[in-house]
Length: 297
Picture 1 (cartoon, one colour):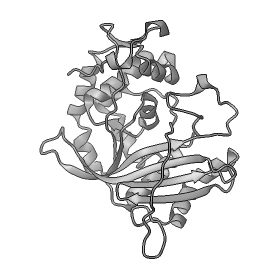
Picture 2 (cartoon, helix red, strand yellow):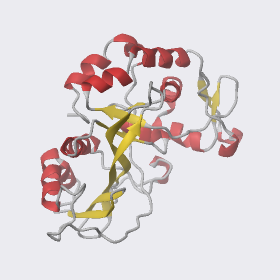
Picture 3 (cartoon, one colour):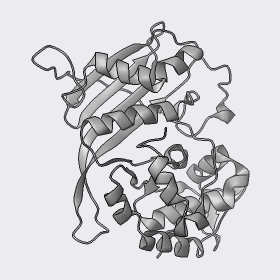
Picture 4 (cartoon, one colour):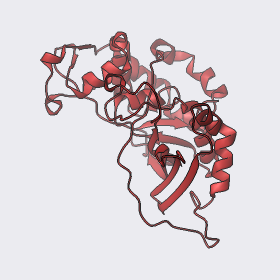
């Protein structure tokens, strides 16, 4: 089961204008960051609860049900340690660690946010679960080679995004959110989410899909690396860069029909026809600050 379920969503996404811009499957991976801590906010019963609701036992049960621990066990991480950090309403973290080395295997940072749909009439605000950070890493992997890592990675990912999707689904349902959103820092982060999420801005969605359409022969790692090195050029030969934007997955069918409307896909298709991309060799790289993002209307 994908994030927020795919039985209803896939039926709608296979029709209409979206059919013209079907995304290929490219390999997604996660990244990592330096972790820092702070004081934990506990409930009167002495337990840390995510969103004031999910205690450690409940988070563990949801992870077990989603198949996360089973996948970790198959990769050699038996009996992983689970930690909950409730630093504030805006900073709630879930850590899964290797009990032998105390290394972080999974780090999820979440908060509930009222997302403003600024491109729609009246700019309505809806309650969404914000995935502020998502890291999975496999430090025991036998294939840790620098040339096989994405920008920002120190170790390969765990390849368990479908299980994490199920887990986040239940958290979102539990807090009454109408969907979820994230802001992918890298191209390969967007690949991780693209099966269930779309960019809210149709120009950004077209930019992302155009990169995949034109550059897929290079593979996900090379595309991401070329973007970070200023080696991706548009149809005029100008360098482009990756600019993060909001990707959204909507749980509420009625809201989904409003946000992912015919007009949205028309704008995506129209912009896709205007843009093209290619990669130049490393010797022709341009510093990232001189690159631009090709999302003109």
